[in-house]
Image (cartoon, rainbow, N blue to C red; front, side, top):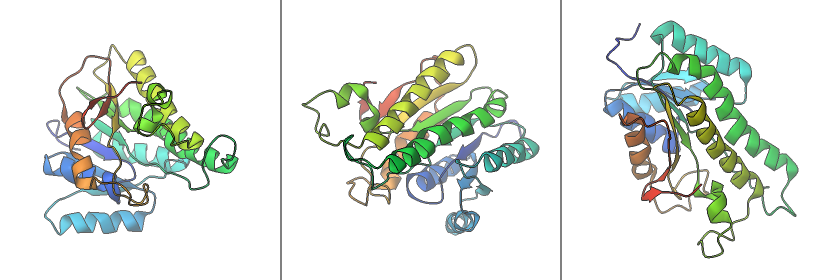
Length: 244
């Protein structure tokens, strides 16, 4: 069983990209990190890369679209650690068959909603009993400014013409999860936050981003480690608050 003084974090989709960097930086902050990966071999490869840098993490197989995988992960965490202090819902996709409402592939929209919203919801539900055992649980939902209804309705916003109905809707739904979690859990020590890393140079963005994952991971890690709890949560970007 993990020592009570150790913080335990689960990061989904952590074998590459921002998730990998979040896992790395949390481990460097002396957090016990569970590196979640759908493909166990890729998770182990990621853990080996970190080990070569003197950073220790544990790998846990977690397919956020597979209820049995989620249940198994939760049971394993409970058996080994007895609680969870930080949940980073990082795993997500962007489907290239997505697009404007008139032309987007409905299958693509379903895949994005399943992975970017229903998956994090399912993982959160499974991990909440463990988070309730923490003195100060944190749920970090990795979102996007494309999920802001306010910005999507503002013609002056630089990304106003980025019309990806599936992706944008999935991130808006994830933001609603943050809002409703905070309302439901306001009398507990658990806080949920929507964290937008910006346009990052990863597979998801087609490597078009001007920020590297190591840079983009800094503020989600700061949010995860924050001791502030006001029961309200936030929709936060690296440069400040984002309107819902």
